[in-house]
Image 1 (cartoon, rainbow, N blue to C red):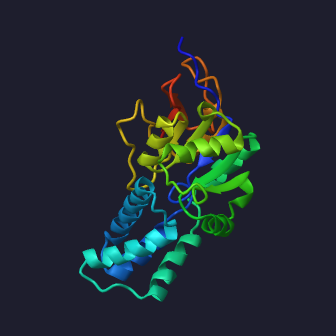
Image 2 (tube, helix red, strand yellow):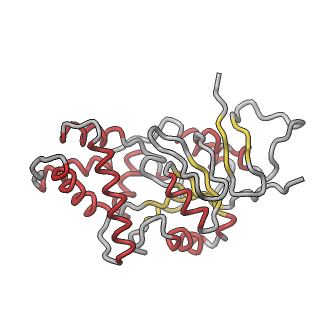
Image 3 (tube, one colour):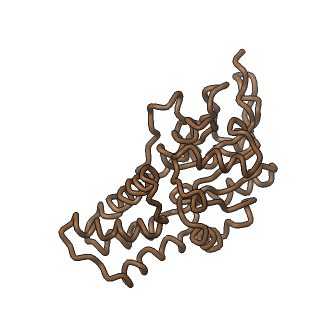
Length: 259
């Protein structure tokens, strides 16, 4: 029989789009630029140029890149650049986002089961502090961590390794939980376990070995993280709507439809 995967000792949660619903910011950017795709274009620029900064060693924080990406978006759409005050007003919305509906029930179950949980975000320290306070999620996490001090954006392997070192947990005993395929891929290739949380418009990156299957945070309930996978002869708890895949590899989950 194939060995079961290790129960993770530490869960590392991405923040934007994984824990927090970006719909408010999406509506604001789409309305500002009068385009249904403006937010997606802006977010893609934000990620693209964070990677440019990582590769070139020319670090700017996520807020600075977000500001520059608004200018680039305006230029791409043939519109005038927005005044600094207006851009600040738009970008401030990232600190005023609610959690997704599955987050508080899922985090509560994980906390009650005794899992260590931290965040790891590309946003600056001050931003993630405000985000978690606004969303009412601060108390779930042992620490609110950012790449800001390391000055390398995810998915650079140093971001995951430094977090594991700081928390004194081996990468193989750590699981990243994220709604972005590039993030889960980066974690897996750095030696971590990974769980991909399904959010609208996000997809698993298919090239890493046995990438995580899409799931909901409900699939992160404690029974799904036990070291013993369910078998055909082991009934699943009624409140655990998942089945575990790929024993012995980076942990992956598949959501069953709730009645």
